Length: 197
Image (cartoon, rainbow, N blue to C red):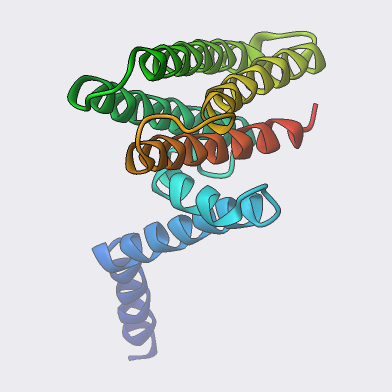
């Protein structure tokens, strides 16, 4: 009789551990661990709320890997660059602006394209880190490229700050888009700066 109780208890334990409920509990626990890693990593970022908003969707991919987190942050910066470029192109094509204003907007487009190129270079550099014998050198290159991208983003803003360009609504839309991009890029640089070798 006692043996059958033990057998029944063991059978129930095995049944529960292999059930979808046990599996979903493990998945939820892992997801919480991944979310916590990103929250902790973003807590001291330059723009913590922006960091969380852009990187939490990558939690399952990133897991608890700081290099994957940097990769996700750079991917988010590239996505933001594309969105910014799209906003500027749309305003450039649809709004009536003076030749002088058009020249400033064209310069801005060039700056954002340069920034995108530098972010792509950073992604390439970071992807090579696992096979590198000199991780410090790779991280230094990533810092240089990302800093250059942020400089180009700010150069675009500088073109609008010196004088009244276009109308206030267009200027505000372009400025908001670039500020948003610069914040995402700054967070990526912060995460690169905190990679351990």
